[in-house]
Length: 504
Image 1: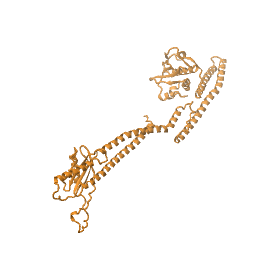
Image 2 (image 1 turned 90 degrees about the vertical axis):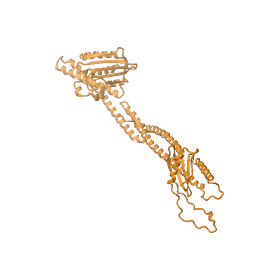
Image 3 (image 1 turned 45 degrees about the vertical axis):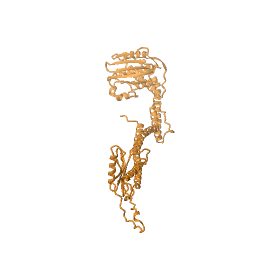
Image 4 (image 1 turned 135 degrees about the vertical axis):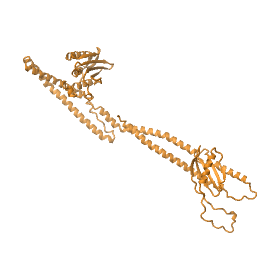
């Protein structure tokens, strides 16, 4: 299972952490702001409840000739109506805030109650219920001092009794939410309800700001984390790029340390040292194989010449001739191995020189076809290519590639098997595919079939001559022509190799 990108995980984790922090901060801030607004409303409500005191004159017997009780009640109701109207604009908002007011006398008789709101009846019930739960003001703890004898008792005022601090509660009706406060004075009781509609609207605006700003902030955090993690992982990408270029020709690559973060310096130093060791090892191995092949080439040539001359001097059909013939075959085989090793060492060093000419691949395939018919007459050969297939390449090296492919097609074929030769060209490439009947190649061998000296399952190849250099050399020659040789995916019982060559 492919794991998600580390950079993506950093960005998502940063966004998740920032999101949790912002959501928590937003929730706490919202509740703090809401509580602050409610506290401010309670302070204003307490102030207005205390201001209601001057509206309660002491109860005295009306003098003779005073106004009638009905007219007095009308005047008192007008005073409370004016008081209620003043409350609507005094709770910190620019609009009229719905307010309900209920005033009772000391005997619980209603002196005034609001009747201008559609929900006054339900709100008034809440106010009356709150007044019933409000405790009475405390009684005086000590008697007032005696008055002087020259003082008129008719001017005596009752002692000042402060009401108990009101407790504010939030109650809800069918259409609104109210903040209610109630207080009891010695001669009257007052309860005020203020609608929380304005507070709720302000809090809804704050909530909408949070709902918009938090996703935007999360997006900015994710983008920022993506960019920051990309900068932090830049040395890793440099390592990856250098590792991808680590071939025999790319071992001289090094990662500069001067522009790298301190955390990656040691890793890059170790990687550069590893590349240095690999470069030194590959250079030594390539030089050894090239030098060994070059040094053995001359003795083998001399030995082959001496054997050929001696073979001509012995009696035909004798035992000595047979032994010399066998020795000459082995020397020729050894010379072929030396030539392959020399070509591979040149390929490793990037010094395989090509003598580019126009090559008629159709003609070469026909020549290979004649060799197949002579070497394996028992095999059925099918062809599918046209005349005039031409490419720019080294004719001798391309012949060696085709010889290796056809040799493998013959050696690893089945009894009474077959070989198919297909070739076609595109505007930029030429494709030559050689398919033969064979046993299935295991997946583990398919991955290593181009390795040098690798011959796969010994039980499968014990009767087949070779040392495992042919396919490796053929692929190096194809790559020297700026293309490749590949093992194709085929149905069971088949093996197919495709040689791809550029047209120019």
